[in-house]
Image (cartoon, rainbow, N blue to C red; front, side, top):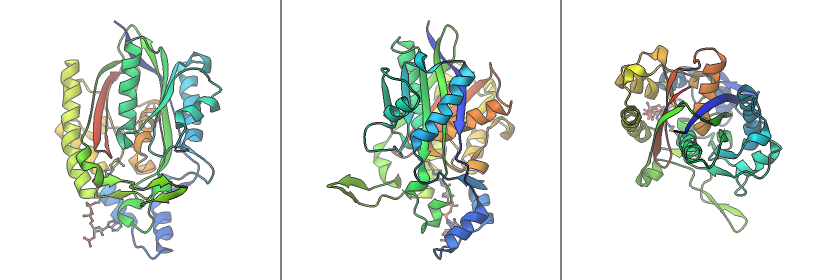
Length: 324
Ligand code: ACO
C-alpha cells in the first residue's frame, strides 16, 4: 500500500509583533476600549504578528516552504504538487499557489488553492493525501498562509483582537509506511453567515463589506461539538483510541475551545500544542505553524501520533490523524 507521510515542516511569522497592550493603544486611537485582561481571559491570546504593507500570503508561504523543504531534504524540482490553503489570497486570480510556485522557482506541476477558511489546512492535507495515495503525486507542498490583518475591522473589538498573520507548510511524500492514518472533512453552508467576509469585487469596485464578521458565541457552540465528532471519526477510521494520541494540534482560535476538546478526549493539556498565546488565530496557517513550532521545540518527535483538527467559516471542519 502507498501512504503519504510528512517529511518536513516549516513556518514563517512576520517580524511585527503586537502585544495586547499594543492593541489597547491602537484601538484607543479609534475610541474603542479593550484590555489585556479581557483578551487573555476570554481567548488566551497575548500577542499576534501582522505583516507589513506590500507583503502577501505567497511571500510568507515561500519562506515557510523553503524551511519545510530544507527540513525534508527535498529540492524544489522534486515537488510535483502545491496546495495552498488561504482565505486571503494575493489576488482574485491566479491562485496564491501559482504565485508561490513561481517564487519557489518551480514550474510545471499542478498547483491550486483550497478555500475552507480555518479548516483549510486540514482540507489541503486531505486532498494531498488522496492524490499521493492514488499515485497522482509523490512529493507535495501543503501550505496554510493568511494575512487576516487585512480583513479586520478595528472598530469591532469583538473580532479585531483575535487574529494574526503567518504561514506554515509541510512536505508530504509518498511512503511505504503510514503517515496519514485517517482523514475526515465536512461542511454545512447553512452557517455561512456566522463567520464571513461578505464583500466581493465587481465592476472595478469592492461591493458589500470586505471586513470580517463573526457571531463569536454561535461559532464557539458549533465548534466544540463538531471538533469532538471529527476527532472521534478519525480515531474510529484508523482503529485507534484517545490513548494512542501523543499530541493534539488543534486550530488555534481560542484556548477555551482547545481545553474543551482536550477534556472531551480525556487528554491532559500538556498533550496539546498551544501557540494561540503568541500568534492569535492565523486561520488556515495556525495548524502548520503550531506543528512546526512543536517540531522545532523538540516537543513533537518522529513516530509520534498526532491529531490535527480545525473548524472555520463555511461552516467547515475536519481532522487528520497521522504518525509523524
Ligand atoms: N475587549 C473588551 N470587551 C470586549 C471585547 C474586547 N476585545 N470584545 C467583546 N467585549 C465585551 C462585549 O461587548 C460584551 O460586553 P457586554 O456584556 O457589556 O455586552 C462582553 O465582552 C462579552 O462578550 P461575548 O461576545 O459574550 O464574549 P464571549 O465570552 O462569547 O467571548 C469570543 C467572545 C472570544 C469571540 C468567543 O465567543 C469566541 O472565542 N468564539 C469563538 C470564536 C472563534 O473561535 N472564531 C474563529 C473560528 S475559526 C475561523 O474560521 C476564522
